[in-house]
Amino acid sequence: MKRLYKAVAVVPAGDGAGFSVTLDGRELVSPAQRPMPMPARRVAEAVAAEWEAQTDEIDARAMPMTGFAATVIDRVTPQREHVVSELAGYGGSDLVCYLADDPTELTARQEAAWAPLRAWAAEALGARLVPVAGVMPIAQSPGCLAALRQAVEAVDDWEMAALHTLTSMTGSLVLGLAVLHGRLDADAAYTASEIDETFQIERWGMDREAEQRRRARRAEVGEAAKFVELLRAG
Image (cartoon, rainbow, N blue to C red):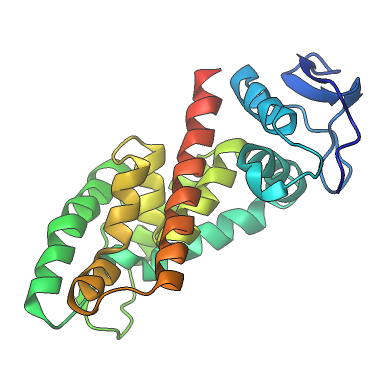
């Protein structure tokens, strides 16, 4: 898509709640053609900066903050219960509960990183997760799953868009919630999610495509954390 606009601005939203981005005076809308008022000026300014930075051709891949805002408007808010259920579902097979049964060095690395996070989930969220060695699934208690769902339900629509990326990119609801609650930063969460891959790379090396995928996932985790930071900065 070509850039057809010249001026980008941040203005008060039409309903007086939040801020909107305008392109040549016209309010930015989502891919589904919905208005996109944003609750925090810092978010709107970041979205505006992405649109201002576009050259002749608009590259949506270079506009992650715009993507998060559009996700809230087009997906999270219209179908919040579905998104809550999708995220809560990760709790039943959370990465931090599945330890390698061999080699012992890998298992030790996983436990060093994941045991404190399970302890945090128990204390901060009331979710006592049970770990298992190997790939056979383990059923977490109804109380644990209910606590994780409650933690997701407590997240507002805007931060839930970021939580979805954090969780899907790491394979762990616990890691995603740990970032939202300030228990981990984005880099630490990503590193904790890649312990097995890192161990295999140390042994066998890594090809270029695998490295590109890892960089892309790390970048998405970082962008999600930045979106939360902007929301909270006001």
